Length: 263
Image 1 (cartoon, rainbow, N blue to C red):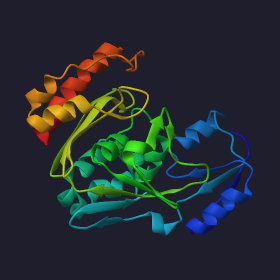
Image 2 (image 1 turned 30 degrees about the vertical axis):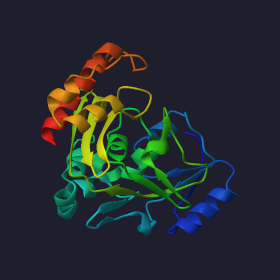
Image 3 (image 1 turned 90 degrees about the vertical axis):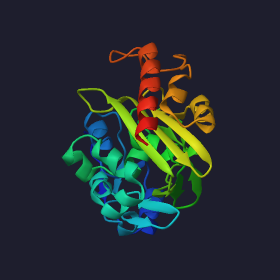
């Protein structure tokens, strides 16, 4: 690990000011991905700006139509918040599937979304539920946020501050996990929202994506059989030592059917 300067601001304003003054700064959320990356010298920022003391980034707000989760809210808080579980049960269910208790204690929903790991769970939640990603300077629809492998629409220095999620009529997430890591070989979130069905797939491609053919099938008939009848192409899907692309295509169909049945 290379030397770096460490900062722990207590406000968004101070965090942005620090980033602007540093040569090559990086924000630190829960550190579940960034710290291993630093240890392997795959990233070598001159300055690390820890956001854990910025209190305005933590918390859950629930209204009749939305839930808003601060970006630095840890997975464990989402898992155990009873009011949130009652309002949008799928969010607590997803939090319970994130890694292990220690990761859920330190890792944050915002860190996961900003990292855009192709096999992470929260990107499927944000995209499948039609969330809005709120930053310190603008709002970004989830449909426009995830742009590629570990890439998002965030600009350098921009801070993800919260995730605003419209409350769905029903939703469920089903994941086929890679046994060693717990990451999704394929995970599918299916939701019936005020704007119609949404189906988001994680783990299968370079980043999370919507399965629009299944959404159209669900609009005609909300049933597991409807999504299972949709042919899923292996074109563009990941193929690695854990699963071939055609196997992942099959899992998309299976997980989608289970998610719709569970919703």
